[in-house]
Length: 267
Image 1 (spheres, rainbow, N blue to C red):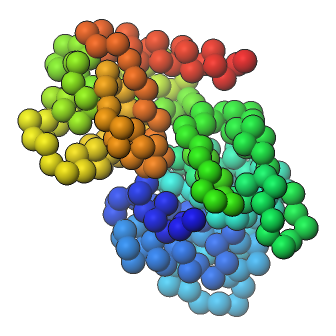
Image 2 (image 1 turned 180 degrees about the vertical axis):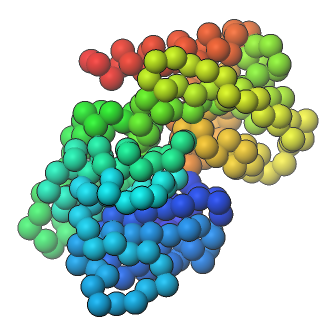
């Protein structure tokens, strides 16, 4: 698994990232070099007596809520299983996520043979940590001996719904003329903006990548259709794609999605 490639797919140059268990900051520096993001890290064993050209805080992952910053993406690579309290960490992380932000955990899969006498979490355990901490698990996949899970605070979701200006069109996600952006704050859904698709009438290679960039701060993308490659690209960008019925009002659809997600998480 290439952590640099995995995380780069979820970032733009305007983003601010925080690594949990950053060590010497090697991965953070690679992300800054390749994507251009603003970087910070925490590690209880790093930062002492060392002058760094980036922000490295000598605190535990469970205490990141003490940082006076907001981050678009908070991640850990092979560090999550070392946390004393994964749930406390996720509660803390939720407090310092920017709107549209996500938490990405890359860790050894359950049963992986790493040569270290450690126990790694099962998929359902990881998902239960997220749900108990108020997160919606957006996507999960395996990559050799690694498992990757991405989550977003349920009460701070941003949802992009494909629109023709009135209802959800029959076109695929990348050909929708517009995207209506809804924000769910825990009580109600509100429309915050309508974004025009500048490539709706075109068919360039990698169209979905352009739409992902356009809707970067939305954790959920909604449309009547999506291509096979597009579905996988959305997943690898750390977002959740939801297929819905065409011809329906966008806000009605967004409200239904929230209601169904709530029901699913409560089971």
